[in-house]
Structures are given as C-alpha cells and as structure tokens.
Length: 455
Image 1 (cartoon, one colour):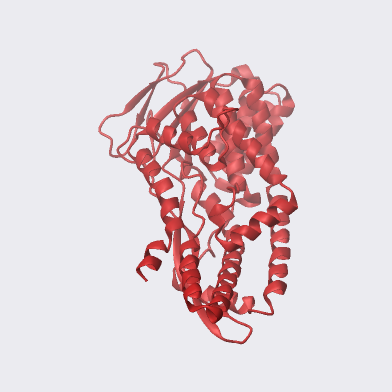
Image 2 (tube, rainbow, N blue to C red; image 1 turned 90 degrees about the vertical axis):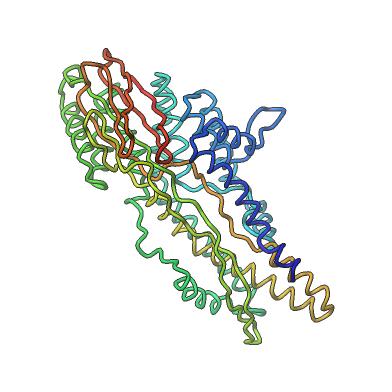
C-alpha cells in the first residue's frame, strides 16, 4: 500500500513540477528566467533550431513578446502555428492510435491539443509584434488570419462535437458487453456537483469570439486603412465588439470608423493614445479526483478513482490602470473565453476518463482472478497512471482592459495603479498621430512591462 500511495498521481506530480516553478518565476517578475524555462521545455530541435513542444512554444513566444524580443517571439509563434496545422491535418489512423494509447494511460501523454482561443491569440500576438516593428503589411496578414480563425470557430466546434459523439457511440458499443457506461456517466453528474463542478453559467461571447482580438483587428484597419473598404471592416468589427461588451471606448472608436467610412478626412482625426492593459493571468487547470461507480455487465458495481481537470481562476494584478487620469475598463474577459471552451471539451474528457477507468478496472479484475499478486501490481499501476491533463497556456492574461484619450502635449503618459506609491511615466512619440501604450501586469506589487507602438 505504501508503494501504491507513492505511485498514485506521479504523472500529476510531474505536470505540477513543470508548471510550478514557471508560475513562481512569473509572479515574482523574473521574466527572463521564466522565458528561459519555457524555451528549455519547448524541445528546440538541435538541427533546425525550431521548438517542437507546442504548449511551451506558445508560453515562450508570449514572454519574448513581453520583453520586446519581437523577432524571436514571431519565430516561436510561427513554429507554434506550424505545429497547430500539423495537429489539425494529422491522419485519422494516427489519431486513433494515439487515442488508443492514451486510454491505456492518460491524456497527458498525447501531443498538446490547442484550444481555438490559443490559435487566435497566437496570431493576435504575431500581429502585435509586426505592428511594434512598424511592419504594417505583415501585421495586416496576421489580422486577416485572426479574422479567419474566429470566423471558423463555430463551424469547428460543431465538427468536433460531431466527431466526439461518433467516438462516444463507438466506445459504448465496444464496452456494452462488459460495462454500462451510460449508468456510470449518469452517476458522475451527481458526484461532480458534490465536488463543486458547475459550468452552467459559463457562456461564450457570441460566436466564440475574443473581443480583444476583434477590437485590435478593427483598430488596425481603422488606423492603417488602405481604402474605404478597410474603414468598413473597422466599423463592422468595432460594432461587433461593442454589441458584446458595451465598452464606452469601443463605442467612441466605432463612431470615428463610421465617420471615416462616410468620407471624413483621416488627417482631421485628432491625435490620440490608446492604452491596452493585460491584467493578471488566465485560469489554470488543476486536477481533482472522485470515486466513480463502474457498472459491470453483471450489474456488479465497482468503485474506482478517476482524475479530471478543473479550472482555477487567478487574481488580477491591479483592478485597473489610470493613464493620465483615464481609467481602464474591461474589454475582454479571458476567463470567460477559457471557461466557455473548456465547457465544450469537458463532457468528452469525462467520457474518456470513464472509458479508461472501466477498461483498467475490468483488466485488473480479470488478471486478479488468475493471479492475485499480478492483479495487485496492475491495481498499483492503474493508480499511478490515473492523472488528468492539466496543461494550458498559463501566461495569457486574465482580462484585457482599455482606455483612450487625446495625445498629451508633453509626450508623457503617466500610469497609476492601485496600491502603487509612484506612477510610471512612459514617453510616447509627440509627432505621431496615434500611439498605443501596451501594458502587461502579471501580479500585484510587480512593475508592469510597457511597450509603445507609434502610428
């Protein structure tokens, strides 16, 4: 029993160790160390110099961007996009083989499967990198990719749900002679509720859209328009964001886009500063366990432990920022976006874990009938390999906030944060018509990173 206790959850311990030190570095403001940790775990190929682990490539790319290493950040996001495409086009036979292997162990052994919001954010950050480098043409390409990813989101979810339903039916047929999966699933609902798992209130933004990415798409085409069609794009995007968020700044920008679309001279638009604030860190996944009744074909009920992921929200760094007295307000709630997509995935995760636990339990019982010692050893192995997949892109923010105001004649934007004794002064280009001050604060007490994009 001691050996069993030590082995139980060893996969969970490994995942926790992978993320624990990394998150500590982030919260303590040790961004260079955190970046290097992510790079080290991204499995850079010695021959090509390209990272090969999708999750840690995303982590590293976002932190490189935070430190204004735009070129390397873009290289990592390029690599992540290639991995996403490879994952999307992987052969059905290969996927079946990997899923089959994971059913013997756990989902954490599978290649990391990106969420839709992660693909959107990878292209969003690439577009922001190009904007920071004044590369308008490549930024335009990336914003178009963002638009296309978001446009396809609902269709992609529908396809995934259909595929998963087919797999669930196939597994139910496969297992029906040995166990009653439906009864186990029904029993799980009550157990999950007792464990505090209630996703009933988790609702996506309409169309599973990320308002931040859609807003920045609209802002880009408004401030870098090549034709009146671009002003139309900007207006439509900003209108969509305003309908989802009711953000007052978005409404003002929408009004400008409408005027420009209707022929107002771009040169007459007054110089302005936009402040974008990335606040805190997105939810992380944490494992929890429940004892689930496995209903065998003999109607005998055997209780066995299963491991599932749950989302844990994290605190804001600062409730808001005041920039020259102008308070930022929420533009996009990443917690909501992450939760909505996780909600779509959870039933499939639960079903696979029940199938996995059922298969392991039946195998253990069959082995034990022939050899009690071998059965005990298999039971130990079953406990050791029962682990939830808790991987996710944890360096994303909890939320995005926004404000804008007239460009100050002094060329200085003063950033004040609740609880910080001194404000942070940021110099902008007094000769640029438009400036974007991009602020990222991970945790309270740490000075935020700041970049200025002049247009």
